[in-house]
Length: 405
Length: 82
Image (tube, rainbow over all chains, first blue to last red; front, top):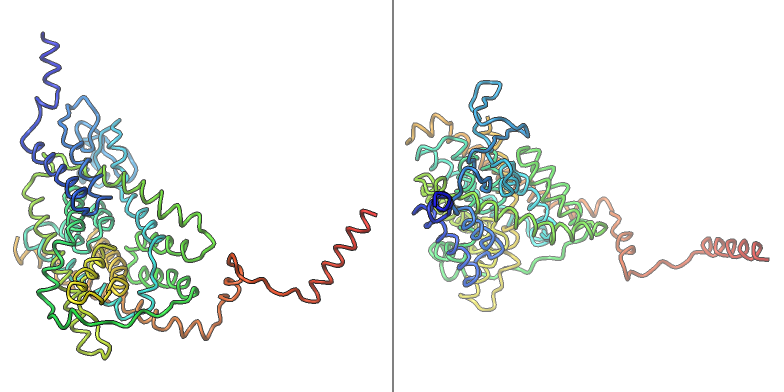
């Protein structure tokens, strides 16, 4: 009888909290959104399932979870005991995972910032920079949208977050999940779960968040502006670009080296035409495997006791603000550019500067078609879209350099 | 909390410097992209060579030297077999 009671005490039912139930419902909501609404299914299904897995209550004796439940502490690849202090006397506060927990080991790729650069390699191998190369003016829209990152950084500071945490929260405005995870892992590992979930949630909700802002800030006549078709780009331009752009970005912001380096390395594999096998692997099998591991383990890191905090709600609020400001920044900057240009830009394409490739470009196309069914903006929107990826990676590098100390 | 936190962390300075550097990076990239076709026309690239090496690209016509080499190889093979 005593054994049965002991066993019952270890079941999930005995240890389930209201917070766990809330998180499991959130996980199911993510999966439902992905399946019924097709909102970023490749991300929301792994994350949603991860959330459900991460909220099954565990006992300390079972090393199964991601977070530290009687586990060990790792810093700079050195395994330390939980009570350890670093040589300089500071308390250990870095990565914590369960010794012997498979999920903990997978999460190591997130907490140490290993997965995001690999995803960037895959993105680079599937990105065609031709539209950007054919219309360099549109690159500026990718920069303008990054204003959301830095204004949200100030907002987070105002709300009392420490500077590194504020930087990691601000990057949600870059609308780039891997970049947000990378920077959070470096600057604010304690907030990584909340930041990752906020970033991916808002990326999935691009079709809901962006259109009202785009319509609010533009007139009907502006939304109907037609742009010249992009010119043909030579093979030599496409090969030279990744090397030159890498040098430009990393010389200005060395902190962006890893993300930008992998992005352009992937693109060079694609454009060189002599490494087709590598490019093919990077943009298919590899990015798929890493996305599964990253999404699932990030989801599993959102145990209710860590995730359902006031801080998480603030992060979600600031994330929405960041996304809104970034969208508005891109649209308004396009309108500003139109004051000086003879060949006008449709300001809707400015909204694609928030990165979120390719969803924000698709949203631009969708909103443009609502006004003029024959005005296809997708190709034009891809230019600020890929420029936004560069801009958010550079912004992450700058914040990392400025706030790491 | 509040503006004091922004001031203490030098938040305004970091934000202004940050957005300036992002703009600078993308302005440089934009200018480079604009100049790239001009630079490539000044410094001819291996585009023709690479195009020829692509599958399905027309092969070059054999020159007189090529024909002499083929003839020499054929003669050597004939001598060996004889």
